[in-house]
Image (cartoon, rainbow, N blue to C red; front, top):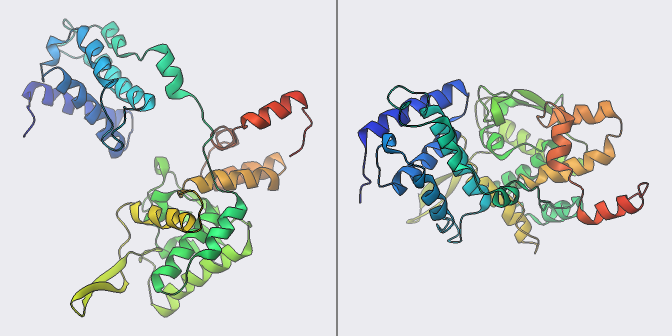
Length: 342
């Protein structure tokens, strides 16, 4: 069943989303999330004109969000998801209050009715210690990965690359061979061609965590360049090329275009851990593992600053705040004995 369309609403939403994207310099993925959040509120009102806004609408909307199930899990929406939806609508109505045709109908303070209850907001924004594999678990999973087929070799090289770069999944899916410099031991994360966070361009030098990872990755790059004759513009981790053999489909080689998203690569990493009986750690969890390693390896302020830049952060404060939370047990140890050493 097609959803209702209020043409006046559609025009003003389009104007806002253009403003949101261009003025706030947001990427398309964020714009789509905001559009979905506004549509969700609009649907809750029966697609009434935004000019007929009433404070009872956001109040009813918040009550509905508290009951709505997640499409992914079937469970109630998380407090963080609800917070994101409400903040998107609050920003939209604050902007709407200043637009011609709406100034006399919506006040800036009306947008405050989208505020999340204080206790829910505290839950939504509370920092939690995320799980990450230990270095020993990473090595165990890596060693157990097969190397029989070409796809096996690619998968193992992917795991190794994560360990020596702590690169983000979206960037990994878009790397091409031209971004790799084996002589310098680096990868150039060029935002013109690589899907880096915030379209940031920077160089990552391979981390000296364990020589087995670098050796595996370099062997893969040589295989692509020397054996398969892949060129500079070919993908670093290419998808399998499927073809028909004996009436069925099978892998016939490697594609020359990169993955469109990270789903397949995420599945590879999770499978590597699950196969050995470990939790299904994803690619992003490697960043926390590697930051913990770096905290003990790069002891001077300058060295840790260099590491922070190496993983794409402008400041080591970002690195520490995002990835070096003190566990509750460790918090207790340090409070009782500040000089306690792990």
